[in-house]
Length: 459
Image 1 (cartoon, helix red, strand yellow):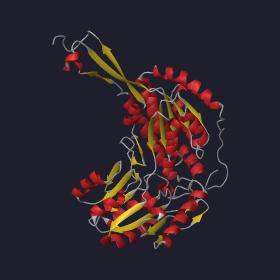
Image 2: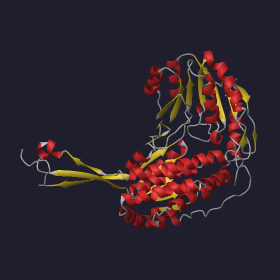
Image 3: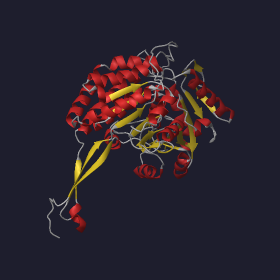
Image 4: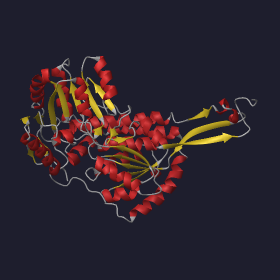
């Protein structure tokens, strides 16, 4: 059901419980086939996939807009990232290798040689979210394919057509059919797949609660979990207030705020608080809200009306606690008008929990060390932003903030797809960048050569 057009825009067959065993059996044989595909061949396919993603970006963006209400300009940007992601995965595939270990540095190792290489893990399971269905699938599927695995993809129910199109794109680029299986369904299907003994590694992106369920279902498997956040951005007194407000306005409502690193909590030094709040509100009011298929639209709809109602109700709760709304605070169906909540109480839902919607909370602070502690007073720790000209403050924040990444002179909502990305605490573990994901999707195999040494054989 397209949340903006309010009609069915795509259909997919739901996986039946009995299908999971057939999926597992196919994956066992497919893994052996994929392991024989040389890294250069994998890289060539991924390079071709990157070119195809760029060539078909407009068609993909339209499907994303229909299925999710995500504006065309955001969908086009996502497809640019898909192209980059596949291309980076190709480059990393060409770098997969191993080591000659210095065993002769210890007496028991004299006369021997030891070597390692990174072998495919075998069967990878990728469970993807709705908010960036093309690029986050490209990360998981691209890295797993680069590593030489077969991949089972469990698509988000809200984006079946986009997920199928990404899989089809990799196959069109030349990947063998054994490379991937695409399944549709809800949490029961995901749990059954996680429990498969054939699966060696599970890569999941989604909420913290669902991530915990994935971990329980998977048991003793390698896990890469990229979970939620309630990202903080700090605006210091020496910041360029107009620039900070402009960046926070543009990155707080991208995809209606449905991003784990979307700007949610903005802490502004009290001396500049009123100036920032006024500038942010003015910037937000210039955002164009409307049809996601209109190229001029900045903010489309959220994923469904229930999500939109949650955001509006949380804003009302903050107002009941003493906050004020400077703009927004209402919805039309699944579309939430960009909302700014000023000075909510510290225990308000918009501060404590993950909003994952078109709402930004702005709060004053007085002391830099104290605001760092306030930012850390959260169950989440994915990414933070900091606006300052003081390098010392930047280094202090990098050291003290309990997050996986810090963006200096930018908001929390910025990512380069070839740079390590991930969180701490309830924001998950593992890092999503092609190089590090390939490490998660491979296993180190060692060979010891007894009585054969390249180091010299005498002690």
